[in-house]
Length: 125
Image (cartoon, rainbow, N blue to C red; front, side):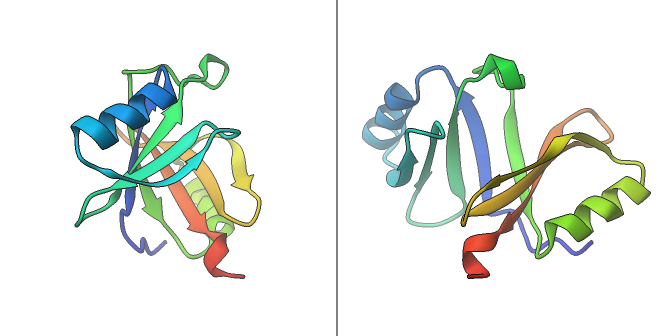
């Protein structure tokens, strides 16, 4: 697998509206995307990667304040998943897709950290 880079890291937050306010008004980041339906926001500064905020979801094991997640971008998520399986990497659940936007697969690294492979399908259209 060839990683394209790390363009986004994200945090789980208890109240996404309050978190967006904190990161924009106090931390000085600019809100780039906000999707209330998916409980997701993306922010950035003048330079660097994006910071994602995900609404806490206990059902999916996403508890506020317990994990920051780094994403690794790939060209073909299905190929990357197969390569990860062949290497014995522990995958969490099935791939998720936000139609027309991204495909994602969560995995666990050798130290138990959660990472996420991401394919930006909006660029494929």
